[in-house]
Amino acid sequence: MHKRVIPRTAELLKLARAGDVKCLFARIAPHTTGSRDRSLSQKMPRWNNLLFPKNEMPSQVVAMLAPIGDEIVVTKATDSALTGTNLRLILHNLGIENVVCAGIFTDQCVSSIVRNLADESFNVVVVEDCCAAGSDELHNKELEIINMIYCLIMSSFELTQMMSSAR
Image (cartoon, rainbow, N blue to C red; front, side, top):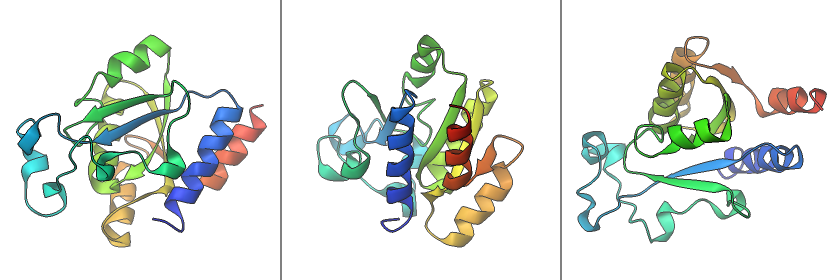
């Protein structure tokens, strides 16, 4: 994550900002003390049973990827930022039709929002080297499942080339 996902995502954010592409962020954190507002899946044992209180460091956006200026950050208590926030309305109000996704965990939060975005008729790209899961096996299996059905999978290099040629 620290050697690949974060640095490559930071590079894409820099390119997006230079191209006046809207950058939005989602973080996971309960809104209540004790996390009683979290979804059932977030209360399940193992990976999802992590508690990131909303005002503590683990729930904040990673410093290298932090929003700048008035970039929007939504706070979710579910795997999907689309069902767990007002992000759908924000995307609609901003006129966004194409969404590029990056994040942690590929097989949970990333997959959930990708499926929800696709169901809402957004065009979705997942940047495979800007995502990670608990293991490479989980990461690769989930990318295989969602590719071409819910989204298009591409590398940060491929997306960078595509964005550069669009200028």
